Length: 390
Image 1 (cartoon, rainbow, N blue to C red):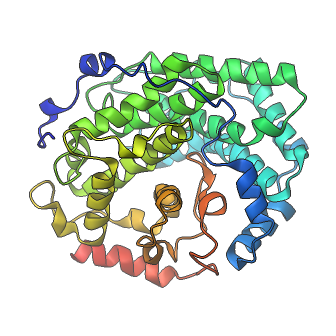
Image 2 (cartoon, rainbow, N blue to C red):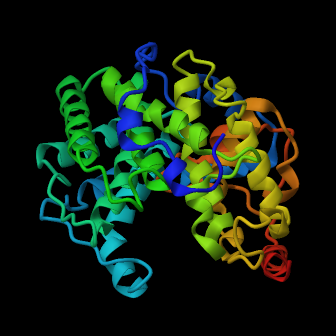
Image 3 (tube, one colour):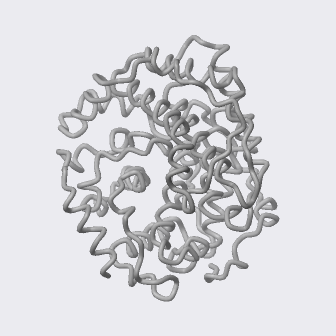
């Protein structure tokens, strides 16, 4: 495995030359989790955390009529940068986040209620955007990539939510065809942009790969699906012997955040690929697997001094209070039955990420992992504060 030098990362040309022909879409109706199996568990479980979550999603589900009144975005998107202008960024991204929350909420309401009403509403909602060719126009320049960045999460939010409901919707054939065609066109247009050096091959590449994997499955587009798989190969190639992602380590005092941020997208990609019948979690390149990246990520979350000379030991740790960044842990824990994450997740559950999977605790948590929701803001603040002190 490579060291920390950026020049040792897999180049775009090398990535394009990867032979991924063995990866094809085998189960177009396979979402990122087993929908029916989970619905059955959720309606048989006695776990109070999951029961409370189920009742909240089912009883306070969104109004379909209200959701269908949300205007589509057809004008050319232009979003200011987050770090230089956070307030302007927040204002500009509000309708984008509303879209992501809407699709995630409708998918969650369907799983919680088992009502086709919410599944069909999600299809109709997305169909409105498809009919308007929404989101296909956006501003991009390598110095102003924020609209391009923002669109990534909108695509995988839509794709992942749609994958939850599509198998149960028997009618709406024309609507579903339009939605799937739109998702594929939107992903294709977005993927044509490779990005600058700062975004071609790091976590933003993994974000593009997440929508590519999911939309590739939904539309039976093998080439797009393979783009998603290529992120796994690229990440494993670039990884150090300890499991660090060099391009994320270059973020300095945000290195811990960005190692974790990379996992936020790599792990869902692996789950999507795994559910197509591939042992992707066992994929090894130069002796390294994704498990090394996770072990390293956990080590530096618990003790920033484990970064060694890769990055400063004084790390920004505010993200430790925000449960959306740990959606990947629910997926990985469910896949491998590991309880080592539970102490960390205890005060963060139920975990929700409006774009990268929605209600992750609801969809993945083992009922034996945790019984009750813990409202412990003091623990979250202490965890972040101790991270700064270490």
